[in-house]
Length: 341
Image (tube, rainbow, N blue to C red; front, side, top):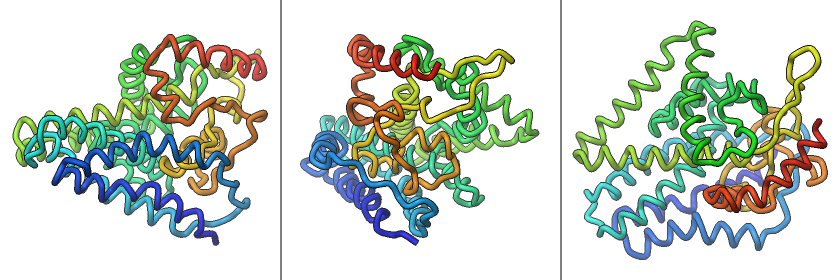
């Protein structure tokens, strides 16, 4: 059993928690520190720790991995309440501090809570799976619990996957198409399986939590909840956009698509952001081994899999400027697509 790597995941993901809590209460330097941690510090740490974390030995076990995920999920709900309290103005923060709080909490939910919930919905344990589902439900994105494993993993790199960007598609066009498309595709997949009640939980649970925000902090609280959830969900879709841009599976003579391989996902080797996002940037191995726990995900060499030129958060920021994104990524995507076909 291996425990050492979990320490680094814990340090990266838990360090901003007290900063966010103090920032929601006192604002000032605390909330700025939380925002800086999620942005400038993360970027600098990726540069300083240039070498990727070595792959875990094949078959290694990580008994503390699920414990950290459960802890992060519990802290998510505490921080969501604190974030709504701060952003709505109920905590007494100044307007400027409320704006900083929106970005600081939103980045944490988008990069840590989303990555953790994604990990949990892949766990076979019923309790852990449902915990991940409720994190997504709290962010008004519960349908991802169904759409991600049932649609995205099955159809990635094909027109049947709403979360695979189309050729040359900009992020702002991709965003609404992917959100609506994944909602519908997940619902169809659940109906085929005869599990019609799941979407009632996603929608009803989200509305119930939104009502709690309204009862606790009024209309401003409900709006703050929606804004934070929208920010976090946009980041999840931004991650899908970056990690699958320009990579499609060729159609075979029999009409089926080629199997999913490591060549159908972009990866990022940067150590700090990988720890912060629970190895989500090791995306090729996740798609080829979706049940593999996050500390055990492998990172093939840059000549073996598509590799992003910068860390995943930095590439997400670049994707918000479509002309710059296309200039950087279109030639790279074309080279890998030619190799794949």
